[in-house]
Amino acid sequence: MKQVVVHPERCVGCMQCQVACAVAHSEAKQLVPALFESPRPRSRIHVGAGQYNEGFPNRCRHCDPAPCLLACLPGAITRVADTATVMINVDTCINCASCAMACPFGVIRYHEDRSAQAGKTVAVKCDNCLARQREGGIPACVETCLSGALTFETLDAAYKRQTDAVARSVSALAAAEDLAPGWALLNAHKKARLELLTSPAPSDE
Image 1 (cartoon, rainbow, N blue to C red):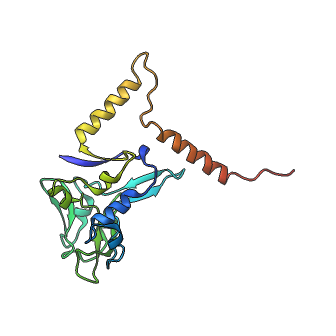
Image 2: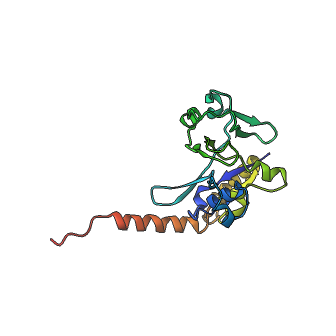
């Protein structure tokens, strides 16, 4: 089965995945009308900044076994068998935060959501855009990611591509292969800029 695979070395920190995720989980499914919805839809993927301000798209891994599922006291978290997607039943969720404490990736948030009773704060996380998949689509974050930092593929395919790339890079007489063309240069620029901004000012002495 296909899963969302993260390639952090390709992330440019544009945050388009966050916008697409929020819109995909809105009622209108369009950006401008979604801005006026109440509660306002929020992203379920979270782009963080690394040590040198490089982007990292952080999302639910749908672990197996899933710590959040095991920690959920009311049994609000279950797994959809055919897609291996870990889902939260907002009607059963009691907002106890046990799942968030158990999650090693910090991707579970608590806020109002249009799928829940009005005014109720519930646990919210990535649902693999299951509704879009049922309609033949792919997760919104993958669809909008132009840099290739997010792909939707089987893990076997992802492993093979990476193995082949590494194999090519170490082949005899082969030129060194940049496993993330262009993005390494961008991240090197970010690193140099941050070091320049944070380095001590030269002394007049």
